[in-house]
Image (tube, rainbow, N blue to C red; front, top):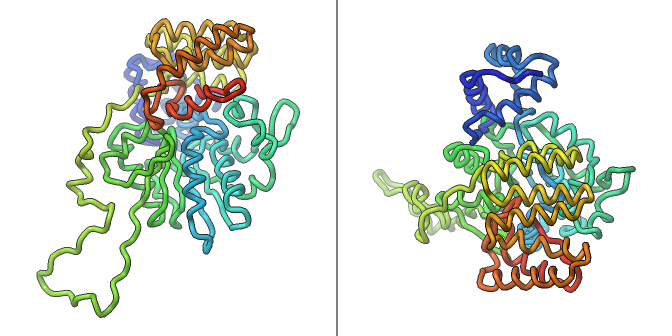
Amino acid sequence: MNASLPLADLSEIERALQRACGIVFSDRHGVQVRSGLARAAEALGIEPSALLARVRAGDLAALRALVDGSVVGETYFSRHPEQLSALRKALRGEGADRPLRVWCAGCASGEEAYTMAALLLEETRRRPCSVLATDVSETALRTARAARYGSWSLRGLPASARARWLSRDGEHWTVAPEIRELVAFERHNLVTDPPPAGGFDVVLCRNVLIYFDRATAEAVIRRLFDAARPGGLVALAPAENFLAQPLGFEVIEHRGGALWRKARLPARPRPAAAPAPSRGAQAPRQPPHAPAAAERAAPPAAGPAPEPPPSPDVLGDARRAAAEARWEDAERHASEAGEALLRPEPFLFAAAAAEARGDLEAAVRWFGRALFLDPGHVVARASLVPLLERTGRREEAARARRQALDALAALPDDELLPGIEPVGAGALRAALAAPRRPEVSR
């Protein structure tokens, strides 16, 4: 279908998307908007101009189709393993006198929600637990409820966990029934809907906030904390933690995996010690970790919050193609994004797509292109190691491993390094130091 609407109409579509679900696109030429508009029009069987007319008229079905076509729902099992390790440790210390409840907000196609359910099963044993998984996209929720995934969704999952969590179904994998029964999927809009009630022990919202403007992201973060119980945990993606830093919440670090804790309620004073209220009395003190509004609005004493990273929506088409196992398309879209931006990270995605389609030499070339743009890119250097080993170039692999470990030597474990998504220096160092061929997170 022809999606060649004028820029003024595309700007109107952008505003409609921002009002509907908070999405803000970063490209000035409307590439992402045109792509989402074309997908929505195709889904409804109409021309883009007709879709625009229906959006202008307030047609809810047209607006939902536009949202479904525009959101980037790329995710996979066991994403951000450092943070999952931190969650495991934190949950082990929780009391066993009540059920554990988790909200997975912006769950996309469900891999993260099922990962969390499996983690709960493994860590809490027979303790009752549940996961509420929500997303704004009905299309993504249908995929999530089906619980059937291709190999791209399993790329971060160790073989041992794959055997425990999933069963083979032809070219796909299906989530085990005992994990599926812990997860309930519902439609929810983080921008316009109130948070689910109930006081969750853990709230996950990862790789969603980066698509919002700063004010919208901060408002959503406050709703996430509103949904957590006192003392509960909130997990954001590594690239999104800077958005929570100025808001005054307590941060918990564990080997490169950062979590945020909601302030616990102060202990109730004994009745005899509680003074009677009097007219003109001063306001009570703030509880620990609940700074005053003026303090919450200011950056922490350690310095201003870092600048936000470039929005990853430039890889939106590549991610969608990869999710559908269209590896050549994913490789092409990623390499085009890399050439347009002259940044190394899209070439790491192109390398992953080339590897997925079985062309290891092309993957090596894409990593070489990334290193040409940034010779000090540690993740690209480290990611070359297993590929060079698999293609028989063991001396080159050993040299790449030494170079990557040398670059990592002076970095703290919790420093985030740029890749397809940020990876902790500690996790990368551990992968490279493994005695067998490492599985490097890209």
